[in-house]
Structure formats: C-alpha cells, structure tokens
Length: 335
Ligand SMILES: Nc1ncnc2c1ncn2[C@@H]1O[C@H](COP(=O)(O)OP(=O)(O)O)[C@@H](O)[C@H]1O
Ligand SMILES: [Mg+2]
Image 1 (cartoon, rainbow, N blue to C red):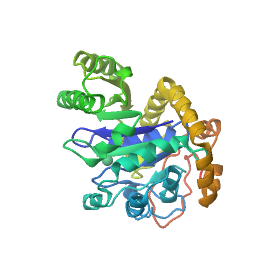
Image 2: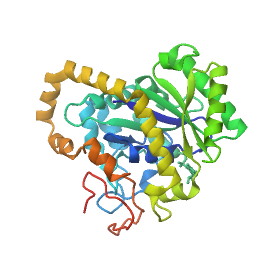
Image 3: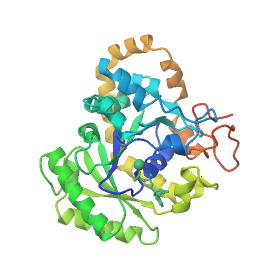
C-alpha cells in the first residue's frame, strides 16, 4: 500500500475534488490528508460523521503541535475525523500562515504517511491533497515518500504545456533526470486529466504521446470527468445521486486502473515491511488506546467495494444527516 500525492501546477483545476472522489471510491482503507499548505477546504464542504461541522483544530494543525516529538504512523489516527459517509480525513490547515507550524516536519509526515500502509493494526493508503506545487511549496518534501505523484490538469493547451514541463521538472528532482521509461523510477509520476467524457480517451492518448515524446518520465494514468454538477454535489452544494455521477464513475475507473497496475507491488512491499517490523509495532499497539478500535473499523475490501463511495454528505452543520440516495459508509456513519 502507499502514499499517493495529488497536486496541480497552477490554478485550481480540481485537485481537492479529485482527491475526495478518489478517496471515496478507493478499493482499500484510505486516509485522505489535506496537506495543501495554503489550507484545507473540507471544513467548509463536508460535515462530520456526527452530523455537525468538522473540527478545524483536529488534523494537520494538531499534528503540527505534536509531531516535533516524533510521529509513529499509527498516531496519525489520533488526528483523524470521519466525514459523514465514513471517509476518514486529516483536516487541513485553516490558512497558509499556519503552515509555519509544519516547517521542517514535512519529511516526517511523508514518512508516516507512507508507513501507515505497513501498520499491522490499522493499515491504510494515504491520499494527500498537496494543492498547487508551483514554486517551492514545502509539500514537495512529501513526494520522495510517495509511491505515486498524480498531477491534475485541465485540457487547455496552456495547462497541458504546463503539466508537461512540471512533470519533467519533478522527474529531474525526484528521479535525478528525465527518463523515457517512467516505470523504472520512483515515485511514479502520473498525469490525470480533468476532461469532458466524450473526448477524454482520445485526449489522454494524445497527451500521453506528448509526455513520452518530451521524455518527461510521466504518463497519463487516467481521466476524471469534467462534471460541474458532480463536483458541486461532492462539495455539499447540490443534491443528487453522487454515486451515479460522471465524476464518481470516472474516479472509480482511475482508482481501479491504478490498483490493477500498482496494487500488487504495493501490497508486497507492505507485507515485507510488516514482517520486518513485527515486534516493535505490537509494542505500540499496547501503548496506544484506540488502535484496536481503529483496526475494527477497517472495512474488508469486499464490503467496501459493495458499499459504494464513502462520499461526504451535504454540509448542514447543525442538523443530523438523513439523506436519501446516499450509501452509508463505514466508520461510524451507519446510523
Ligand atoms: N471534475 C470536475 N468537474 C467540474 N468541475 C470541477 C471538477 N473538479 C473541481 N471542479 C470545480 O472547480 C472548482 C475548484 O475545485 P477544487 O477541487 O477546489 O480545485 P483545487 O483543489 O484544484 O483548487 C470548484 O468550483 C469545483 O466545483
Ligand atoms: Mg484544493
């Protein structure tokens, strides 16, 4: 299992939306981390499982306050809140100024995120919403720990040119130089296009050719539907059958394709790491109350797949949610 970092070069193509959509349909237990140094959005878009608003102080902010003393991967669960619908999230910072509190901690965070997959008690992949990475955002320090860096891009020519150049620059930084054969280098750098479903397939193959031709070391790993209605629903601003939306259906395909390509390798490396660390992890389990609880909450994959997306419900902060059309997720949302 793995850390998957999502980011964009410039503008606001829909990184947060894609991160939530992918996490909602991820075929294994997953933790969605709002690591955008500019601040998170989920507090404004999603209700907590208890029906009220998410607590902005529990998440990246509370980690910033404690991680200086070290961060064992399982401790991440102490800062997690379940959304209405069941998705487990690390709520992002309030405003960019708070990122100062995380200065120097990004590599520690990256290591903890990546190692959560190896936890014998409550293993999960981590999907990290890193926001924009133009300039030298500190979230870049997460990338060397990631198995997969997904660059989100719209399909206007200037966006495609930028994502190509950003991919090449990242490959230079992370792989020590651009390469033709992306699969040889870690982390894998993938481009995900946010595109109209009618033209997505053709565009994806054209953009992939462009990435290969430019020796960026990246390739197109999928397309997320340009679906304004689905995006509004996911952000709690509109009602409807989210699980049937183009957005969620396209996210499901991207998640499935990624797992088909990399899932086995990630599972094998997690198993190897678990085998190595056995005894010390057991020790931590005894120390940390609540871990057994977390482990119990983890859905089996089959169950998770049947339940459909753990999509956040509409934000109605003071009213408990009872909404028709939504599938109930795990982790305490099943009332
Ligand atoms: N796949 C999508 N299709 C259509 N509109 C989208 C999509 N993703 C995001 N949007 C819209 O774009 C705006 C920015 O989305 P957001 O996910 O916050 O982007 P970012 O995290 O890149 O800033 C929002 O208004 C959102 O509704
Ligand atoms: Mg965002």
